[in-house]
Length: 499
Image 1 (cartoon, rainbow, N blue to C red):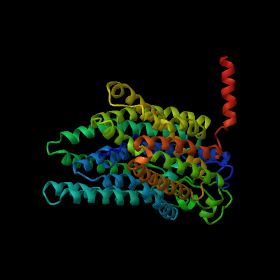
Image 2: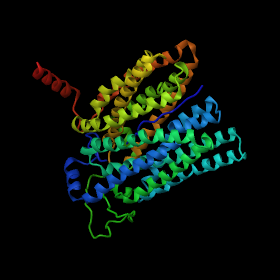
Image 3: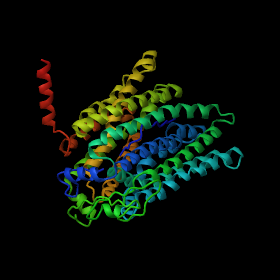
Image 4: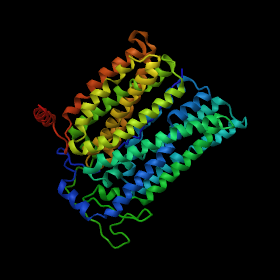
């Protein structure tokens, strides 16, 4: 049994929000004042640097996960347990994100904290390059190399988990809430284009390397590590934020030029940055989280949704490779088609989200995405499926998945207050990551149990759970979003005009 993991876009996935139930968020007037007084060139350069950062980080992700890493384990004759661990580790390590958020909120520079966390996380992969070299010289066997790979995946994601919430909180302070959908749509689209171009090139380089596919992967991995280091260099061109200032009675943004500034109240150019006063919230952030019913409702939706999606998503490639017996070259081609659809639709969904909000898109597109597992049941191994139905299905998954990823991550920025923001993000990642890993594990058990009908039964159950997961989303409040009643009234007016 072979499992191939394909990533089509970075969830950002992953700003300042205005939520009625969160008293620590900034009101629209202070946000407008901040954007008028803050250095626009510094913010603009920060967003450009973040986009370039996403490109280099995307190359690093391509070489250290997805189909290339899965194919590497296949060449080493890894067991199905190893593939299961490869899928579950990135989700389980999200449990460490609250610790990372706690540490980041006590730092004095988002920039320095990011370098301290992601530097070791990416340099750890050099040990795998050394392991591949040792395997080529006969100093290691395949089983030892598989164990080394899984250990590197584990510790690399553990280190990265300590910085995810801090990075998202950093971006939350740089991107205006009215431009989140548009900016992240463009950024993710560029990252998807990078994946679309680099995945086939990397696959060809690995398969045609004169020293064999294992050595070819080692060379590609080294290039990916260098790209990961280059992405860290982009952090120096972003406006730095002091979490200590963000979490007290003011929110401050410090401009910088090619270096991370010292976290003080005055920059070296002589310009003093604006300070926005707001009421001091409670000291304990966990008490604030438990009292924030809007955030808890979104957490319920997001966690249940991650469980329902991961119940079946990791097994779609298994369905094509094993049940339908489709060649892996076709699977990579379909993943490229899905990445292209994802890239094109991200910009569209981003602009629409800025206009009507994220919740409506998550709900209505979520219904379409929920029925996707059922569509796999109509696929068979014939020419019509290979040339038409499978490409159309992957286009459908890429277009709807773009909306789910973009709006889901942006919605996190809407429901989390500015005070201790990274702790809110870490809580979402930890709970949702655990639920996603549990879904993957449960899905594997259901497949092995003939009582549930194998993969077909799993796809039906996943559809049912996905639809149920959308129900809490109805009760989530979004500051800029339209209500469901407003949407239906607007659709009724459009229908009358057309009539």
